[in-house]
Image (cartoon, rainbow, N blue to C red; front, top):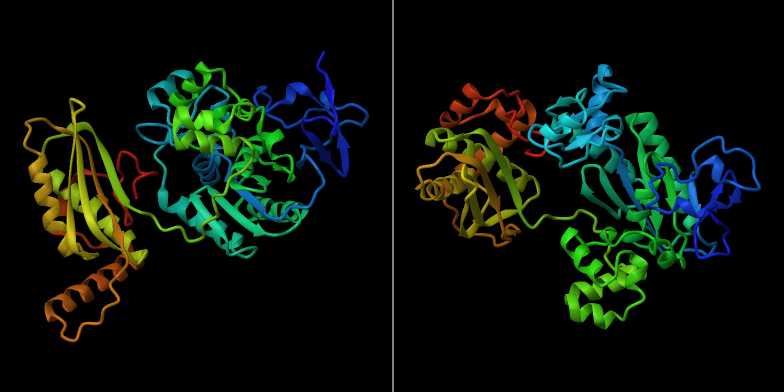
Length: 460
């Protein structure tokens, strides 16, 4: 018989329709339940008629409220919304691996980052669609614009992943904002949104895990450590499978275990990471919500099945990937101070070469020659290529120096680049292609915006 816990105990209390109820201890985050609370777990109140909206941990006001938003099964939900025939059926988005899967597919054991071959084995009825990135990006931009109506401090961690810093407000104000966000996403975007709220990014993100799917969990200030304690250590930033195994060897499996050992001991065993984990376990996360986060690098890549050995095709593909990356870089008003080209051969061997750019540039005509020359040096082995990538890094801001004498040729080149970007923005990226890239249009499926690559929902 599970012991029933109240708000006076160091466990969770829940609120629904203005009532605080007690819940079974089995409803810990790792108990396997999909719902936050079930009617069978409630004592002293009537039957629950709707999913719980919030978890109440204490009643003290919050000096800082951070919301974490996560669109449930984003890519798969958009595909089900676009094609009514997919609704209620197991759907996976991806070509080589599962980039997103519907909740119907998850009931069969399908998970994100799983190979599609394994996903089909687990779920023979699985429907696989390649995905369409521009559609996902357009929806994410709508949600970002709506979030910015509540606060300018909005960090877009991923297309379906947002942080909002509401500042020094009562946590109940965060609950009110969360309700408005969920209502807008449900009515306008017709998608499901899960929200976690807390005093820092870590607590809000963990609360979102408990809120899925389509609910809202609020962690009140002062109870962050108690809330995090029963979760596995893998919920902490920087704790992957390897670090989790290392912690388990010394008996540290849950977040609460980390608070029972001195921080200097963790720092001695794991360096600065151990010290960070000790702070995280106490509910202390000083990471700010970074609005308009600027990337440190821009990368575009694709894989080939079967592996590709035609050097002309590889040159054309690298040119395409480079122009896509450079187009995004110019939109961010940045310049490349260096470039890296990477390949992986069919035998699994990976090679990469990088070179600096002085001065930094954002022009396709200046980036293309050294990139193609680097590719030629990487293709010395007589084996086909399985994967190809280009990365622009580090990124620099444009030089503010005003030049007295400008080179006419450079000015014409920059003007031509601006015209190309304007045409592509209006008529689609592939409305303008170089002669070298025509081989791609002949061999690959495409539309006005992009080539249909091996990972179309991830490669932009």
